[in-house]
Length: 126
Image 1 (cartoon, one colour):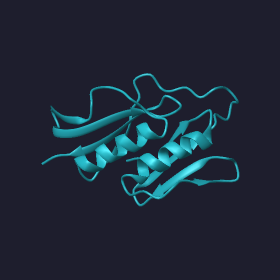
Image 2 (tube, rainbow, N blue to C red):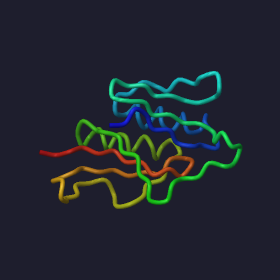
Image 3 (cartoon, rainbow, N blue to C red):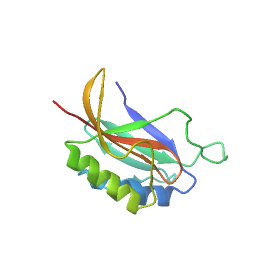
Image 4 (cartoon, helix red, strand yellow):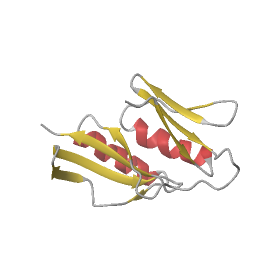
């Protein structure tokens, strides 16, 4: 359904350090900076990107927005969460753990990145 997701950041280098660590904990390669200073994480299933806002204003997180990254298991979600906190992220929501809802059991771990974007590692449990 998605081709790419791009979030705004006031400091792309700081955000790259955060995402390299957090996504690296789940096995993703470090991001690549292009000639416009944007950072891209390209996978077989889509692209995640970081950029300074093109209008020159400060980046801001979307109120009510969450971006979810698929985790292979709960250990990967926990590693993502730990790496994110160690690299400038802030935990939010409930602590990492199992939540039950209309889509079954999910293992969720939430963070805010250095620019305040709300992100989540999600593992669908069977």
